[in-house]
Every structure is written in C-alpha cells, then in structure tokens.
Image (tube, rainbow, N blue to C red):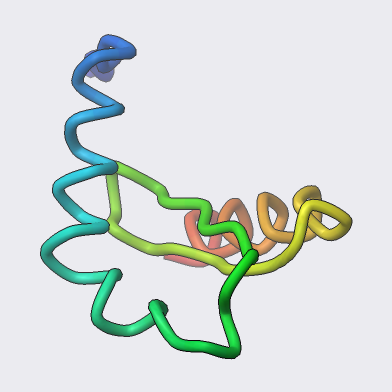
Length: 68
C-alpha cells in the first residue's frame, strides 16, 4: 500500500502543533536555550542538540523509526 506524502505546509503545521502541545513544556528550559529541536511529524518523536550535531540528531530519529 503506497504511503501518502505530506505537503510542506502540512509538515509545518504538524510540527508546530506537536511542539506547542507536547514538546515545548519538556524542552523550554534555561539549559536548552539555543539548542535545536528536530521533530518527526509522523511519529511525534523528537531529538535535541546543537547545529554541530544536527546529523546525529537525524540519525537518532531515523533509528527510532527503523526499530519500530
């Protein structure tokens, strides 16, 4: 069965909704100021890090999907 691709607008909306409803209360702390958050809009999983380790953040999200 083919999977339906989300439009850029839908990805943006889902990401914002997930951040506002679930992720923001967990990550907005003084120690996380300046860090990045990557969100998998299909699963709701997220990773935090800096711009230096952005690729590792992506790898961790992908590995979560592959282990499901």
